Amino acid sequence: MEYVKLGRAGVKVSRLCLGCLNFGWVTDEAESIRIIHRALDAGINFIDTANVYSRGLSEEIVGEALAGRRDQVILATKFSRPVGDGPNDRGNSRWHIMREVEGSLRRLKTDYIDLYQVHRPDPDTPLDETLSALTDLVRQGKVRYIGTSTFPAWQLCESLWISERMGYERFVCEQPPYNILNRGIERELLPFAQKHGFAIIPWSPLAAGWLSGKYRRGEAPPPDSRAVRRNWDLESELSAKRFAVVEQLEGLAKEIGRTISQLALNWLLQQPAVTAPIIGPRTMEQLEDNLAAFGWSLAPEHLEFIDRLVPPGTEIHPMY
Image 1 (cartoon, one colour):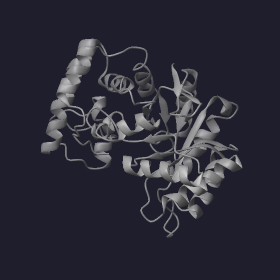
Image 2: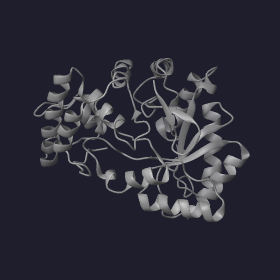
Image 3: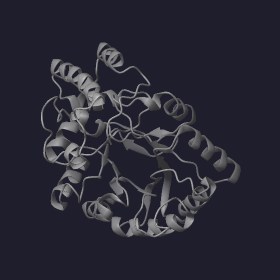
């Protein structure tokens, strides 16, 4: 496993980040813990979860799995998404942040969070209020670094201006959706991140399963797939465009002796602005497949082939 700096921060993280969205919901606790331990043994030291994943159960499972190994891990979690029906049970206010960090610390069985991330922008809360509260958490020792998820470049730029002017902590990373089928962030976000030293930690690197090979044109999707859970229309014109790209990517993967998911992850690892794609295995088999995306590189002609299929900056929107 290779390790790189988390943006401008001095801490180093593995080139793959273990995402824990499925733990406690799709994957039971015992299997989730096995997956976490296997990832740690493979050299992954970066784990990402959120207070809303499995209604907090994901954080509890991660906390249980890290017993005795907490110091080996850069542990990330998030806040912002709704955790209840009350008017303050969501968002990026100081009130919500201060309550939710205590719940995450308790569930994770830890005294500190290495990376505390704003899960989504909140138009109802001034960004300076959010940065002020997060700065207080850093100074209290409850949080080490702060980051964002799915923020536009202009809002990250605003955050830098506020942090410099007010003396607040600055965000060190951004988690955007990014994959071969969704390259929209290459237009503004990635150039901004490179210029200003933001780490990029892409979520949905397999485009919600489209780049895993599980969906086939004209075939029913697997019964346990997201397509079934969310009732996707796989017969639409847009789905046809996705299938056309995926089928050619599968041909390339077969040619080089890899799975399409390994190809998709390796492509991300070769993008200059990317720090660590977030893998989200549901099973041990999926984790082993994802780990095999590391340690080799697509050839220049393969990267050019992918650019012709999906030109830089293009979006063939997957269904998240």
